[in-house]
Amino acid sequence: MLSGQPADASFSDDVLMGTSIDLPSFWKQERVVAQSSSQTDPITYKEQDSQTLMQRDEETQTDKATEQGFQLLKSYDYQGLVGFLTRAESLVSAQLLQNIRSSAFDGYSVEWEERISATSVAHTLTNPRKDPDVVCTELSWNKTGSVVAASYGRYDHESWCTHRGSVSAWNIARRELDPSMPNFMADTSSCVICLAFHPTIPYILAGGTFAGEVIIWHTNNEEDPVFSVSNSDELSHQEPISKIVWIPTAKRDHYNLVTIANDGKILTWDPSNKLQTPLSGSQLLIGNVPAQFRPKASKSDMGIGGTTIGFPIESRTNYLAGTEGGYIFKCTTTNATQLSIIKRDRAQAPLSLSNPIQLAYTPHLGPIQALSCSPFHRNLFLTCGSDSTLRLYNVLESRPLLTMEPCSSQLYCVQWSPFRPTVLACTGGDGMLYIYDLMHSKSVPVQSYSCTSTSAASASLVTALAFNTKDKQLLATGDSLGAIRVWRLCSSLYTSTISEEHYIQRLGGLGDGTDGGGMGW
Image (cartoon, rainbow, N blue to C red; front, side):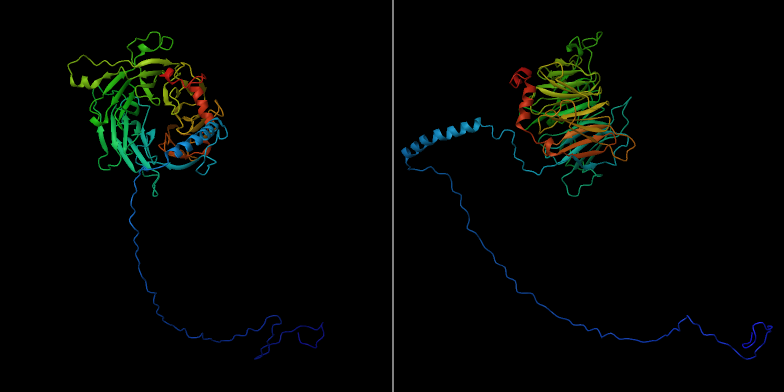
């Protein structure tokens, strides 16, 4: 439309040849571009030498110290000394007597270490090389308290053992500790059911196998750790060895081994003869069991399978034995048959061992799994069994003083604390660790802890337990998966008081004010 025409005029198209029309934008800004450059100051370099100060070494030498021996005075005022002692004696004696009668520090104990408020797992140890079908059967700490050893095997054999047994040991004091790599490993031809470190020599470890062999290892010899293995003959065990312990002899710093097995034999071994022949032996026979405890149709010469053994403190000749039938016996080694003589004379009659049973206690309703003698009183001992009961006995009484049931599952282990007289621990088939303090409760554990990994589908059986006798903070447990857990206990579980020592003495003497030692053994 052309400008100037009326709005209603007719429209027409016109072509303007060679003409262009530019309409400038009212909103777009015109872009302005500029190019420029810059130059930094040139970089300069400078080298500078420096020289340290002169050094000088000096040495000094102290005078050699001379030891002065003790010499009596050749001349002194004898009368003056006598007079002083006469005047001072009555004062010192009166003060000492007052201190003895004072109760100001009763129940007080000095705490040299920082208190631990809660029990926790310090280490979880595993051995990936072990047979996957075996469980941890027993634990033992060595003399220094820095090495824990574990034996591996199975209890539920239906016939011959086809498993590869083994023992492993970890030094938890090492900085470079690898929890999944033991510092010592040894394989055996059958399951290892029990083991125990030597009480005074930290590298000597003894064990018993399913095949009835006693083996001694030297853990400091990596190339050939087996020191000795017992023979397999009629004088040795014919069935699985269930417990092995070291006992002191009359010879200073000399220890023998005592083993008990499912064949009912209790044998004493001298490691110095490399286990060639047992020194002596006994056989558990039902003939010495009181009539009210044994089956009615049983013959007197019927054997009883042994499961565990324990020696009270200060005793080398008396011991307690647990059996497969739930019986608990007080036994003696004084009438044991001397086997070293029989070994030299094969022409003798068939082997017949003496019966060591002297006294029987109220039995459990199933096999005895563990027995522990009190380290604070020789009359007290603990037992636990497959009937889910934990019992405290006094050797003066056939019936238990206390009966506890921490769970409904089978109990595998029980042990007294070596540092607190009234503290004990036990483990069961429910995967728990139970700790009792008899000063607080005689029926309920003061602490309970799960020993099963959170990733496990079900609870593992806790089949082994061992307090550390050197480091009072440590306790170890082993389970059916082969895992070893080292627990750091809270301070209340190992700090003893005078009151609990008095309490355990009353239990041991049955409340008569004496320790009952002469009456019990």
